[in-house]
Length: 271
Image 1 (cartoon, one colour):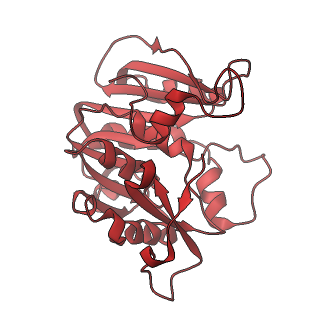
Image 2 (cartoon, helix red, strand yellow; image 1 turned 60 degrees about the horizontal axis):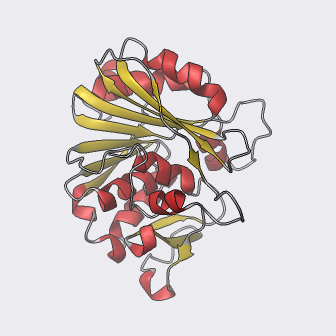
């Protein structure tokens, strides 16, 4: 996706802030302060993940691996009664998330959000001590690193941490999600299609009533992303939804549904 840079007058960060951009999302309904060069820059993946949360949602959501906060804020912008905790391991990216919440263009959302610097892969007492208490959220969304370690990795440390999956990462993140959500709470994961088996295996015995949606760049192309949503403690079988086509049948422009999801005007699963 493309994002529009803010006017310079809206950028109120201090002179010591690392090189960054201030970008508009949801047609200017919220702004993101994110690194200009190193680290992860948010785009369509974050918007699709946020759109997996039902539009009627009014509880607390934990954004695992939040980066600068795009997915969490996108939930708040669409769900006026929701609250979000932006959970990020890297202190540098957590600082960008804090700058995002402090941006004046987000004043209408910032009182419903907070930043927590913590590693979501922690377990048991270590996770609780880091600020992720059991049964504390109604929903967890996650955009975990999904590049294989053997893929050519960027030399930038922050970007590498955000993009390259460590062994057992999906299992540990989903295990933590099962601990911190309340009974019948939700989870949503965005990943690559080849990781569907690993996602479902990690959810097995924890989450059920799973729903899966594949994302294709165009109707004649293979899927490039999957989004899986499920409920803690449920026992229903996997349901596969009609896919999302990012581009229209003809031409290079985005499809109408993609535009609505990208701008916070529709949910991914139709609820």
